[in-house]
Image (cartoon, rainbow, N blue to C red; front, top):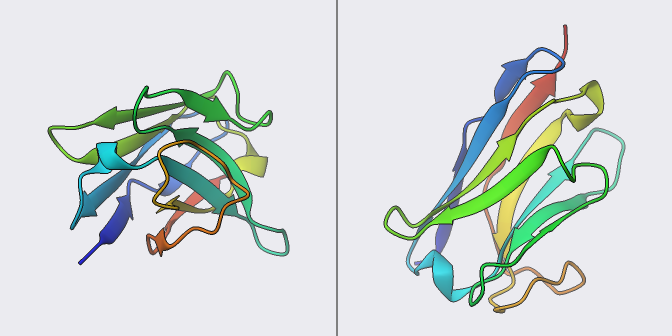
Length: 123
């Protein structure tokens, strides 16, 4: 059974950092591209970052480029999202997901989603 479980969210002050984890079961993470999405109240869901399966190429939304880093630990079967220099506008529920494709493409239908983890950036 394919399952994605996020963790690591919380409350942090502006300028702070958090590291989100996306742990997989039922498949090996390096088989598929893994994306992070976020959704803030009253806003549409947006793609944040993605790591491809074969080359490990990484992609970032313009709003987080230079602040967030996505990585994958194959031994732990986990994808991480290191979030630095957090801003109040980063407040959202963050989900990891896969479309079971090897390359990143946020326009695809994503078949597996984690339950999400809340990130709140506030002083």
